[in-house]
Image (tube, rainbow over all chains, first blue to last red; front, side, top):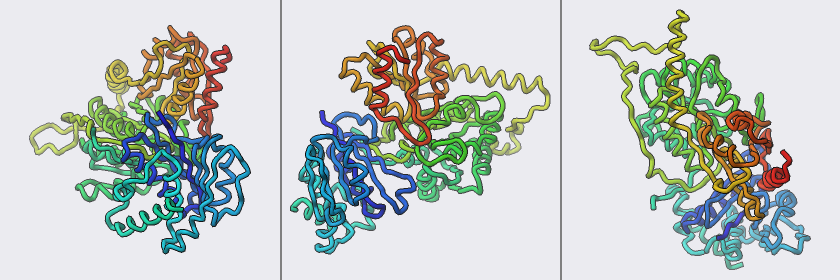
Length: 177
Length: 353
């Protein structure tokens, strides 16, 4: 029995909620129990946005995450806000293009990924979120890397089908980093 | 296994309503329930239904009243301050004995309050809100799946008893996404010989009205209505029990608070504390029997709520104050952490209530 609590945080517009949705769908297609909870306060209108994803082998209790196993930080305010809440032994994924600071804690594994730079160089500058998800899937066994295309198809509307391949490329770039 | 899709709680309500045969939605936007209206706006025109954004909450609830009188499945949705505005209509609908579904995705109050989740409309939903003697069936979903299943149940019960069913949810359940399946939904239909459908010159006029100038007639109508309420109380209370078999302490919580409480109960059990959870699914009728039975075996109760302590009054009432009841609460849009609930359980074990 395993439950993984993932918190993704950044500015509104960075695709924080989308990345979380992707993870939730990954869990769903793997027949896991999942929950996805966005912040819906005024912060999502231009400030910090975050979302909580629980992926579990058993029914999800509280969807509200106070002590994440995994933190994905896409800006400095989010890192500072949540860094101390990560459980000892947890993992932190940081977009190091946007966050220059290093994590001082030694009881967590920290991954520094220049996701924004990677995405920009590869020609999909808005997909830093998915670059981070690619790395997350490599380092975290809550979800597997296989079947990304089918997962994306499940929730990207047919009108935007052209974005599926780009998202897959971004995931791959993160996975390969 | 039935196909599972990911949906927001608010969207699940809207989709379930459509599947239940609701083709009339009247609303006015307010956070955190606007997805219901947005979903209806997108879907209703495609299936021959009506989506109407009224000029106000008051207008929308009176449109619900009208459509309900015509015998169709109809709903409106809002959040706390908006539901206060609808209170007059709720009373008229009750006084006219027409069925309707009203959704309250609660936010912090009183006044304009905030937009974060809350359960502070418990009193309003279960004890009145509008004027006069009346009741509403109040359903409290704790998951996205229940947002759907209780919406369908709510329509069924409303038609069956000719009264309002209220879905009393909160911002968290409304905004979160979880897997959901619609395949087990049982849609019931009821004849509505009282409805205003046109006489075709073949029958007497039906009248839908809440005005009775003769006190004798009003008294009889109210008493008859309460006979019906009694049947609802006897037959329709729903609750979930979790780890109650050998429980010495009992947490009582509904909606999102019950999800947090469940985590705390599981942790407390791991620590060796014999604690269980009773989760009312219907807040009216309140699951009296579950509480009565628990009062005979546990040493105390902990009511976990997102308000200043509202359901706790019913916990005390239906356990006849046989056992102490502690309150573990946050309000104003804050949610207690599982650790806070756990702390209350530990205190209860030490006899601190």
